[in-house]
Length: 406
Image (cartoon, rainbow, N blue to C red; front, side, top):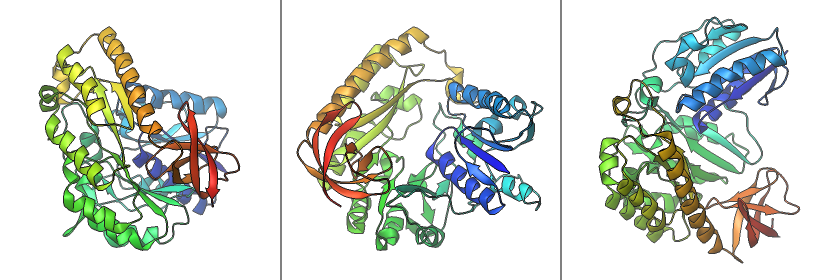
C-alpha cells in the first residue's frame, strides 16, 4: 500500500507531516511526500490566509485525479476552521483538525481516535529525517491573539514539550542541522527552563541548531548569552515584524514598538555581527495609511534585514481585524511591489558583505545554507554534506561558492 502525506503551510505542519510519514512506514505503508498516485492520502492543511485555504480544498481534487479510488484523510488548520469544506466530499473518509494528529495514526492502526482539545503537548513519532536537516517540534499553540491571526483559535493555547523529550529525540538525529519549530517557540517553557536553556541542553550534539520564527521579546541579553555559549546555534534570527508603524502594530495587538524592535536588532548584531535577521511583513492591514507604509519601507533599511517575507493582508473571519474595512486590492498590490523592490535591495546588500568570505554550509541537494541563512551553490557538494565554502559571486536567490574544505 502506498501513502502520500501532502503538506501546506508552516514548518510545524512540515514537522508533523514528517512524523505522520514515519508512523505510516511503521504501519507498513510505502510513503512519499510528493503528490503522486497513492492508495491513501493525508492532507495536512493550512488556514493562515484565504489563499492557503483555497489551495487546501483544491488539493483534494488533485488527489482524486491521481487515484479516483483512493482514501483521503484531511487534517490541519483549514479543516479545524471549516470541516464542512472537506467532510462529505468524494473519497474523503476522515476529517480531523489541527490538534491530535497522532489520532490519524491511531485510527489507521485500529487503536481508536481521540480528538478532544489538547491541554498538553501531543507527542508524535520521531519524524523522517533528511541527511541535511530535520525539523523538531518543541511547542504548539499560541496565547498572543494578534488581531489578524486565526491560528490561536485553531491550534489552542500554548504548550511545550519537555527538555528531556526534545533531547531524547535529538540524540537520534543523524542530520547536519536541527530546526526547532513551533507556533510560538518564544513561549517555550519546561518548568523553570526557557528556550535559551533548551539551546544549552542541545549544545552537546554535533549538529547545527537553527531556530524557527521568534517574537521580539525573547531576544534579551540573557538569551543571546545562552545562545552564544551553546556554540552550535545558527546566527539566524527570523524576527517577525509585521509592520514598521507603531499605530499599525498597536491595532495588530503586537507587543512592541518600532523603536524596541530596532533595539533588539542592534542587540543581535552586537552579539553576532554577521547575523541574518529575516522577517515577515503584512502589507495592507486595514488601518495602514501611506505614511504607515512608508515607515515599513524605511525599517527594512534601518533593521538591515537579510530577507523579507511579505504578503498582503488576508481577512480571517473570527479575528478582531476582520471587523475593520479592508483596503482595496489595488492598494495592496502596489505596496507589495514597492516593498518587494526595497527588500530585494536589502538582501543584495547583505549578501555583498560576504563576497570572498569563507562560511560553513550544509547542502540539501542543489544548494545549501550557511549558518546565517545565505543560500549557496557549489559544484561537487553532495546532499547532506557540511563544507566550508568561499562565496565567489551573487546569483538570483543567493550566492555561488567553491568548496574550501569538507
